[in-house]
Structures are given as C-alpha cells and as structure tokens.
Length: 109
Image 1 (cartoon, rainbow, N blue to C red):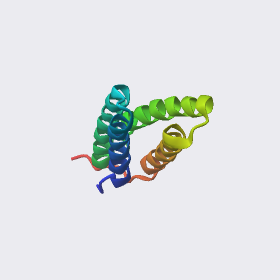
Image 2: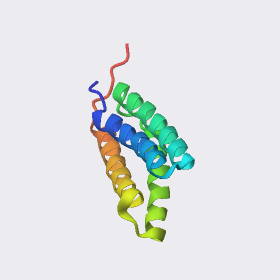
Image 3: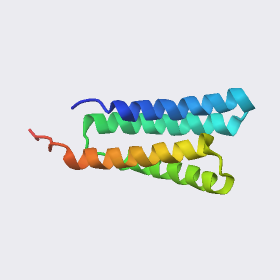
C-alpha cells in the first residue's frame, strides 16, 4: 500500500501549529493539543497507510479537531489558526473517506 503522505503532512502541520502557538504566545494548551492531535493523526495516517479502509481513528480525530476549530472560527472570526484548521480538517476528512472507498480490498492468506 502507498503511504498516506497527505495524512502525515496534516499530522505534522497540526503538531507544528501547536509548537508555533507555544513559541509565539507561550500557550501551553496549544502545545499540548497540537502535539496530542498531531500524534493521534500521525498514527491514523500510519493505519491508513497499512490498510486504506481502516479510517476510524483518522476520521474521529479529524472530526473532533475540525469541529473544535470550526466553533472557534465561528465565534472569533479569525482565519488563523481556527479557520485554516477547520478548512484543512474538512479537506482531510473528504480525502480519507474517498480513499477508503476507492481502495482495492486486501487479499487474505
């Protein structure tokens, strides 16, 4: 199976965003959430790299992150970081679901 490169990039972007939030604003919650979500998303990308139909973790983490950031964007109106993460999460959710439906079934031995 080909690696879920976009999944890994998304996970790294989320983790890097948490680190950037800490560096710029000394926000420990941003650091913790960014690293936690980045780690979960990275493991989800690993799972979908191994089996493109194993999307539960990726979908769950993406829905939670996208939902939280969507609410933050709606209440604050600020595009960065909340709006951008809501848009990226929506795009990743669509990509993950489409990839799982177009995946070739794995052969069992």
